[in-house]
Amino acid sequence: MTRPRRATRSDIPACAQIIANWEAETDYLPEGPGAVRLVEIIGEAFDKREIWVTGDPVDGYMSIDPEALKIGGLYLARRGQGLGKVMLDTAKQSRDFLWLTVFAPNTRAFAFYRREGFRMASRMPSGAEGEPGVIRMEWERGA
Image (cartoon, rainbow, N blue to C red; front, side, top):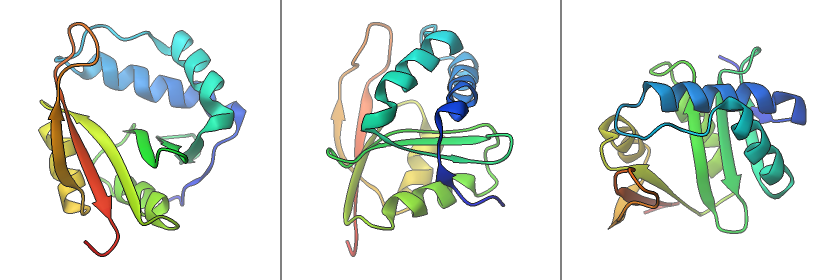
């Protein structure tokens, strides 16, 4: 298994495609912005975020807002093979607290984050038209 590495700008198209594929496979979300727009979105946030990838070619992507201590996204092209755990372990290495949101219908992700020590902190309404509500989950070292 490939260890996560910090992303470079040349990784952005692969990261965008992983997200676009996930959005296309997810029946509870409205149509996403697509890979071309996602390249722009990731590019605009690149210098403000800690972005990690796995694989060659890239098959996993994680974005962390280092100021808010929020995992903004964790997307994998290959699920169920331990990549998510490796990515989260990387995020936890130098932190005592992290939080993220999970779409309420995404029970697989919710269960994964619970196994990784995250607890449900609150439920929040949808952030965008046609999207389901989200669950805020938090992780604290030693909790």
